[in-house]
Amino acid sequence: MRLDKLLANEDFGSRKEVKKLIKKGSVQVDGEVIKDVSHHVDPNQSEVVVNGNVIDYREFVYIMLNKPKGVISATEDSRHECVTDLLDPFYDKFNLFPVGRLDKDTVGLLLLTNDGELAHQLTSPRKKVDKIYEATINGVVTEEDVQAFKEGVILDDDYVTKPAELEVTETTDEHSWVVVTISEGKFHQVKRMFQARGHEVRFLKRRQMGSLSLDEQLPLGEYRELTEQELDQLKT
Ligand code: URA
Image 1 (cartoon, rainbow, N blue to C red):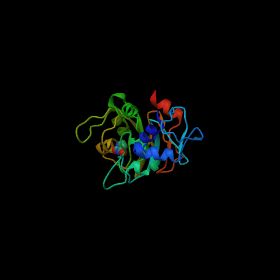
Image 2: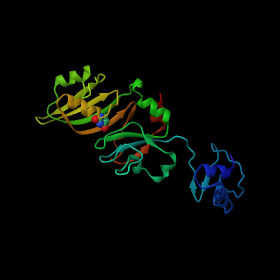
Image 3: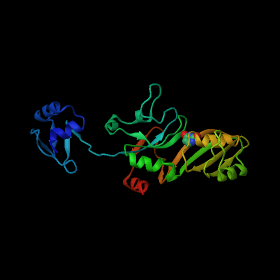
Image 4: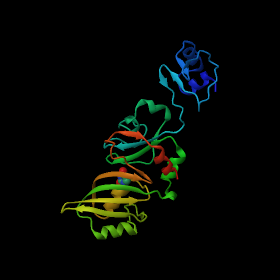
């Protein structure tokens, strides 16, 4: 690809602007300053540096975010902070979007990518990808609740959920701590499942989606790119 075309594609300005940039010696290819705008580069092989910054040509990017409370799972909103606002502006050019949604007050694992195919694989109801949540529930969650989740719960709109796994890890007179596994992603699903059983969710955190587990080293609001291994597992 011609160097001027590549830089224009990478949003360094119009064809005319990037030609100027190249001619003034701001661009290096494989360590050498190149002033010839028609110089050919191989985007998969050459290292192109503009004003000291290495150009990142990747088509797809995959980010694991530990979503904090108060941020919405969207890319744009006139009133609220969005999950994409938490990312470094470096990622703007990739047009990342969240895979599925977590409620504004839900925390935990959220994948951000621009890979529409993978996003579809992970969110399509037909693929039945497991999502695992930790929750704190008002009241005592009983064995009957566990059984009801196993059979499917009737939600407020009469939808019967697919079987879900509910494990109670601790209870007091006032609260229960649970782990829930669901294979669907209906609106407010976990909260509505507990509501159908007469309980209220006080705290909700997603810790896993398919094979991808939240990196517990990531503080709330922090993110990192997936490792190659995490990505391979997620794709298979
Ligand atoms: N279920 C909910 O109720 N809320 C979420 O954010 C995710 C699952």
